[in-house]
Length: 428
Image 1 (cartoon, rainbow, N blue to C red):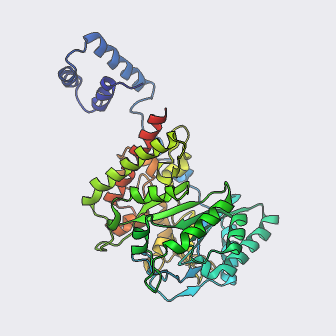
Image 2 (cartoon, one colour):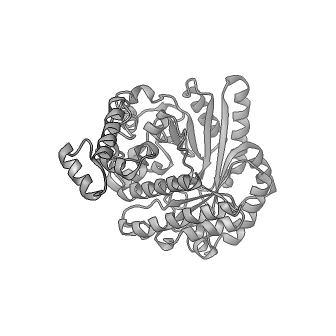
Image 3 (spheres, rainbow, N blue to C red):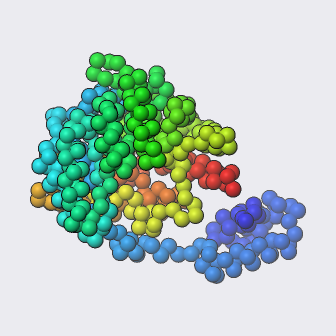
């Protein structure tokens, strides 16, 4: 166990001359004996000699070796159309700046083939059905799944599907097929009815809460133990978003996520650095309440607090993050390829198509640099091995560079990690 004395000594050990360090420590700890101080310094020096403290980062040179070159996942934008008009939608009501359109089965099949052809030795391949609203193209979604299942038989590949939906078109048939074939389901709900309905509106201006909540409950109940998430978005309109998370938990849902809004600079929904104090307080409130509820047998999972301190992600994942533009690509209804769904529609990031493959190799090589060594701020950050360099799209929107820094995003992430670590310690 690291006590306060050892912590303070370690924090100064390689930065402050030893005589000055000792004077500072004696001022802070006037009752410390010379023997205690000497023993602690000796312990630190022993750890340093054994490579347990201040060891060199051996992964800098290994990043190119550890990083996979093959494709593992596609985000299939099967619908560039939506039956809702959410006020903060980064995709422009699901159209991504273009015309509304649906993916054809031919394009969907070719996307599956493209993934298999470029997956190398990977066995498990992931496909996310996204939009717009994918249930507007439900028959094609089902046929793509069936086609992929046929390919599994002789290819040695295994497909894992995720469906993200606003829920308006969920019915018994959707529930049955989804719960049979989808490894994960992401259901969009922003929390309290007044918050949800202020942002997540239908085209006639009506809110979506009363329409989707009963359908989500039915789907989740039928799903049993299979994975799902109720995913919300918080904006400047609900900086008390812990209340929204707890409201969804009170509805009976056990797997929850609440994401900061994705907004361009100047968007009135966008979060500001001045909001950080209020946001941090909400994460603290949530963590404390989650611990209380768990003791009462009413616990639930919050995606951003799922921290595995004992094992955690492999070093490959820690170094390269989500694999945007390298291991993961987004496919438009026309079969165009983008680094991820947040870049779709921006011609500067068009990387190729499923018919001819990746054409913009220069752009793809730029995305290969994304990770914890992309900028000086990341290299020195204590949370880098959990953040993995952050979101390239958010960095680009904030700084103009995919390897830039989204300051508010970094601070929010670190606060979530602090809360997750606190919860781990409290449980122990």
